[in-house]
Length: 444
Image 1 (spheres, rainbow, N blue to C red):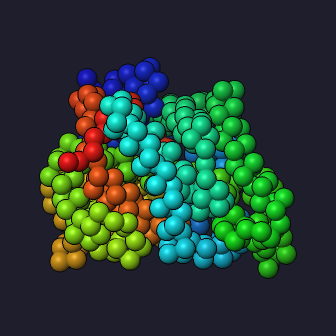
Image 2 (image 1 turned 60 degrees about the vertical axis):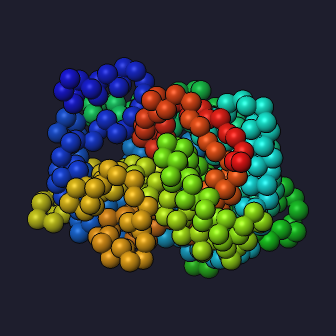
């Protein structure tokens, strides 16, 4: 079956797997066209070419209109989708709030959420019942980010509704985007379905209720939400409206847990399938903290656990494509690019590129050891993006994930049910095509 026939099969299945767009030579060449699309699309994988696109000081490569339109019902005009002067204004207002992401201050929120989560794991181990790994990671990371942003724990039912609503949203959006990317402009005006808009409204409703608690409490809170509420642009003397606050805080909430949950799902799946990895994480945690609490100062010594997370991010980057569009005629390297050409940077392909990584498809956490980091080509590891739009939560996510891996694998064994069914699909995030069901047991 040829690539176009495979794409048509994916579209008919409603799978929405954007990985089906990836040409085989994307893992070999610095850049190349997406030949079976009616649009002009270039996939760019060479770090020497991606760096200026991601830096983009002259706004030559703004966000792609198709993706912006697809995400607007969920995140509005937030800085995740905005470009140019609007994005710079939003960033001026929000940057001070990032100072609240002090890891030592946020660490107790991580520990509290993890304590509650481990109680549920203990019950699952005692009952022997199977549980969804991806749902569990979504609930845990949503609770952590909620405690950090809003100073409030997140009920399991709410976390489940957010997880399921977002999964439905991204599956539906990815399916439509796949059709638009392949078949071109006649399909650009496909409206969002009513049930997709309802899923967005449910998520925004949860964010709105958390926000209203802050607005009603006045100056009671000292957290990220309070800092964003108080943010004011000195150049225009404006602050965010309630809807704009939902936009911005919604991005913090969704980007702050969905991407980490995706990477942790893959990290635990790999650890379950490669018991030596899980055993090494446990041995390191025991050597650093024994069977007692893992404190903030311990985390920097959990080198192997951290590198397991980093390698999971390399093999399964949460964001598969970073879409841009050429706002005017330009060049990428020596190739002329016409105005309107879609330019797609693919972390999935960059991270598995045969010219950039030795044994690119092999899980090898030790490639991130200090003595080997010189082997990593600059710009070839971009799970958090790069340039001015680089994810400001990278250190937060890495600390959070290192703690979670160390604590859970120190105490529990994980057994994947029907591992042969587990395969990645790329929608808005890279996640398993179907729920990964696991059973947990307490280590002897």
